[in-house]
Length: 136
Image (cartoon, rainbow, N blue to C red; front, side, top):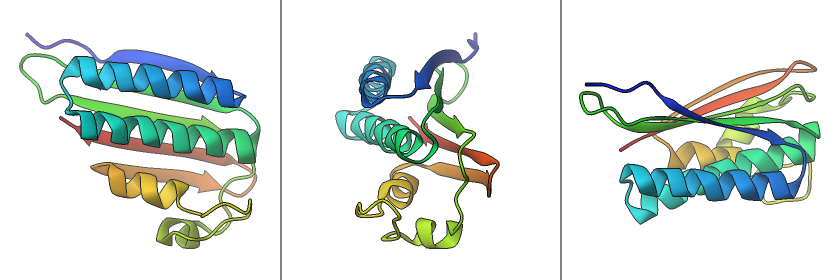
């Protein structure tokens, strides 16, 4: 028997929203059976993508989908979505070390390295949607 994905949905406007999403994502990953290291990676990605939403777009959403059915491979998928300015220098951002906010420039590139699958859809003035998946 296979279950449908479970969904956690978070409106992201403040660092408090990011913290709440991170904590609940970590709990979900641990409950699904992810080892502590991988559950922490999931929480870090939720936090990094959430902070980017707050810093660059002002508001957006994070959706966390989990598939934990008996007959299918388990995973957590994170979808970070905003209608902000988009990522102007995507290749530089993905290479790491590029920032316009004075940070280290490792949020997106680091998140990409922590996950098994990572996809970005962005357009200048159109916002950004990042989908990241971690297999159990």
